[in-house]
Length: 400
Ligand code: SF4
Image (tube, rainbow, N blue to C red; front, top):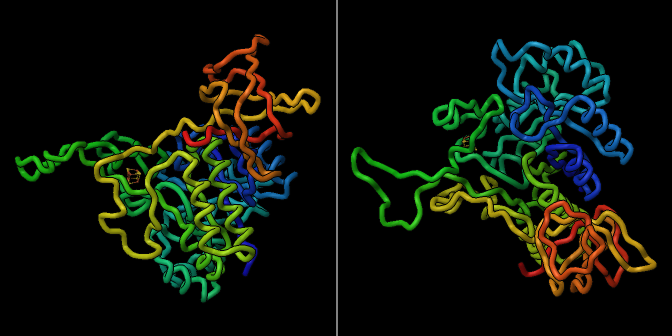
């Protein structure tokens, strides 16, 4: 099998470091302009420099998305931006406009050009065309089946990248104007308001439908989870496995990236069914919607939709981040994210060790007082632990 790249999203520098530390081979991010996640906490110029420096110091790559659909008014400053990204040392740009490809080929020296899933590449002929255009990689459409991926890759035209986890559009990616219609926010210029996930009353002419259901109607898709067919994607020799979610939390990233890292790394060393079950147990600890395998196994039917719910369940299991550990006192310093008490069973997970569990026996708050409970987000506290932990480890509640 090939050495596949695990590609993670990052909404800011902190999340980029989390993705790198927890096992991503490359991270993609958006600058303040030209990206499809205008509302993510995107990167300023200095953040991109810091991101590239951090990633390269860890032998990882940074890709920058420039994947909006450009109108005339959006083009100002694009040339200078491309030159700047190239000089900063960004490894690749992800683009959805032929003009951006042309311009990048003219003005940049070393950045690769990856074509975004927004271009809906679903067949090998499209890749042949994109190769002639000058692309180095193509992100296949999320609407590709596993057979499509296998057949496209068998022709070895260009390296391909496929989505493996995260949100899906109810409409064909990049062909949706729901948000434009409902909110005047253009989904293809970074403004998607996730209108498909709102709750609606449904009418046929003047007749209201589905009145008997307990909740209103949503068009939301379930999220993608490709763990059941990841082995086949690797055998198809995809170059990169992409996790969706530049708006997601650092806890979500740490959990999902480390779970897929385990799946890739242990693919040939343990029973496959057991491994997939273990990985999904880990994934279930991240907040998220119900999942399915997207278009990989079949064209989604009603089972791929969340008709009566829209929610990405926000879980309260993420308790905080370890900042340090004093071996003399066995006290870990941590920054709190969610409330917990003495007696809470916690699990500590990090990139350098197996997961540990322990019961909280002692909490010292930021005033130096022994307390029974912490509840202030971002408070720096100390807890006693029966084992050594590392700065950057994450702490979550067990059986929340
Ligand atoms: S409204 Fe929904 S289907 Fe449309 S672009 Fe946004 S997430 Fe995708």
